[in-house]
Figure 1 (cartoon, one colour):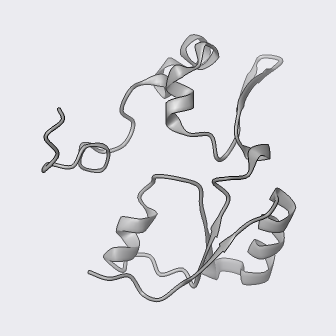
Figure 2: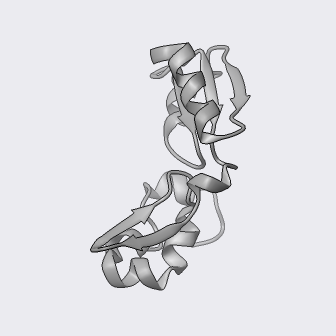
Length: 113
């Protein structure tokens, strides 16, 4: 199925993303990488009027310790989590090789197992 029409905006900074969210309200959704939003849009279970891409904002990518807390940026790719010694030590479940459903991370037609 084809998703309903939507606009796409690449945020230029975290402040720009927040301003866009404020401007569009509940009609906007953030896009930061691979997740279930796009399949939901194809099935029309979600129909945002605008997608705000935060996936390339360097300020939102990274992992650091802050006291006894692990701080993970909103746009940090899972591959970065899986490769992080800090994550493997403090939050090993996040470092697992697969956190999504098998159909998303490895489609049934994929020859790779």
